[in-house]
Length: 285
Ligand SMILES: [Zn+2]
Ligand SMILES: [Zn+2]
Image (cartoon, protein in one colour):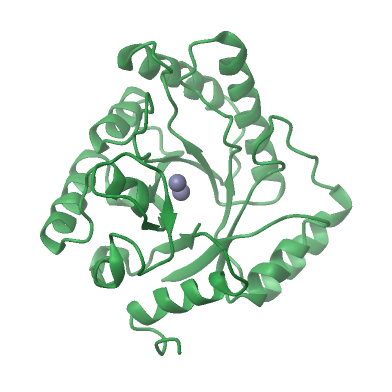
């Protein structure tokens, strides 16, 4: 079981490794550039060797790259659709360059054009992306909270996408606990959690889960609001996370936090809480 956080790549790429290590990460997630823009910055080639060296030394793995938020492979307008494919391919090339394990993309939104249309777009977009060199990376589709016209909040929908791409082995999923709860899956309840995991295994296969985004949820069950909360302080709660972390299916899994940081030390605390709920560390003071 490994735990990590989303860290900044500001300044030098290798600084991200030091940031991750300093807060107690075994794994890390980064953006390939500005998370709110289209154009990801170029990783400085001169930094790559040092990045690799520090990552090996700190034993930080897996390495996850999260695509910028503007990317929408379900977009009806050609401009956004094409830019999304280009950004995904660009990030994938970077993932190969830095030897990342996973590239995470939100499933996308049909923006009012209808579910079927959106799923067709996503299928066409992913098909195009799958013509690229993946190296050893996998593309993980992240389940969404299902706000507005967002697709991929239901497990059935993600399964449909994967099945329509002939179950390509390079495709996996990133399971976000907050998004699942907001989408209506009550992960705070052990019986529902059990059903959810069985369903996930039946429809998609547990072996496709690359990472779990461990976020508590500030909203209510099924409200479709994507609002992350500190671990233990939201609707999933400490008992909910304890049950998730104790699941036998997840004992080899990587959990990455994307929790709010109103105060310095929040990441450190959330990682400590997760480890203590998993029973592999003392509970934080
Ligand atoms: Zn997430
Ligand atoms: Zn979210």
